[in-house]
Image (cartoon, rainbow, N blue to C red; front, side):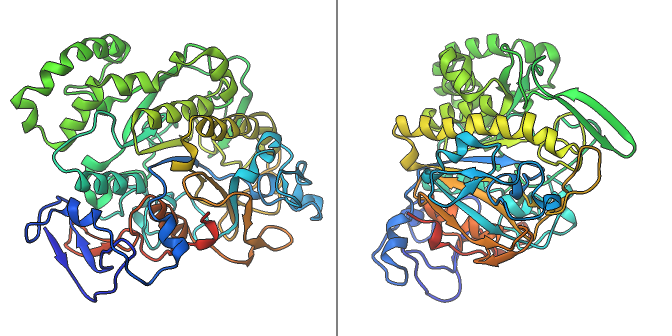
Length: 503
């Protein structure tokens, strides 16, 4: 059901800011929800630039660096800071933006930042791994950030995009899911039980969870050794984000199975099954019984029976030269798969640089900070990110594809005395980088103080970033969705579209 609430303040897309869109997409007075969402009118109230950029992007690749990179070694270097602040790699190098310096461990990224917009002034009051704040429109973090399936949670941005597109085109399930995430179901590869909310359907329901891939493979012998400690336990292992064997790759996760439990045998025979499903797909699509599946079952069926999905995540179909350009590591492999999925027709593809094997893994550098930044983290990112942008541009996709690279917070300015040096959680000031799809090029937005510890100018909230991404994707960030208690809640609780980021 859909209701019209409150005042009649109008948007550039012709919808009231108090329009209430309720999951289900039913009709009002003969007009479907999809038709209402598509309505566009020449209303006043926004700048010409804002109107021009609305809906500029058709798709989005989210690169999420879990654990949070240090701003001081990446996009907010402080060469004049004392050594206990700037550390071993804090002097930076010149970039393609005149006068702007990038961390010296990112030379390839430094060469292409003129194609991006960098924000150095993100800030919020929660220095902990609550990624719900970064990827949903929730107003603040509470105790729910440890429960991924709490139906009170705000929905993931990819889930909202999927919901809105489904409302605009009711009655059909795309062959390539609109909302896909990789490389594995979130936080599922860390040893010990861990639950984290964020990339899920929230109050839209589990049918709007991302479709997940899974990783089959191992780290290569050439990958850097990672040492991580937590609770008095130290683990040493090789991480596929630093390098993986050539036969490693992505497959469809267990959630994509039509029915029954996942077993190793079923996982290992998935490729054969997909080949069989390809033969059956045309007949199944005409079978009336498939129309009675609920949406989640239909998505699973479409994913397993569509050759586009299995082909897209199989990056071994790419020439060896292309795969090597992205780097022989899991992040680069996933970025290449993301590009292929966008080409295949997906709308919102997420690449999570996620925890692997241990607590304090990924970019969560509480210890061994400089070794991990130098030998694993920055080199893998610096290999893949510039190539992804170039690849999208050469294929004519960058102008219509957002590339959003964010995390949940930053790292402490002062280095502590942990083994190998450490930077801890810090949310008062951190950085992010954006490209494509209507983002400006060659801009550095916001400033921090002399030690990158506090925002000195032009603060941004995570909600501001989400509001701007929604705007570029053609979705009003103040659109109201009804939660499970019947309350009208905005897609983004308190953010605003930031014109500084727009082309």
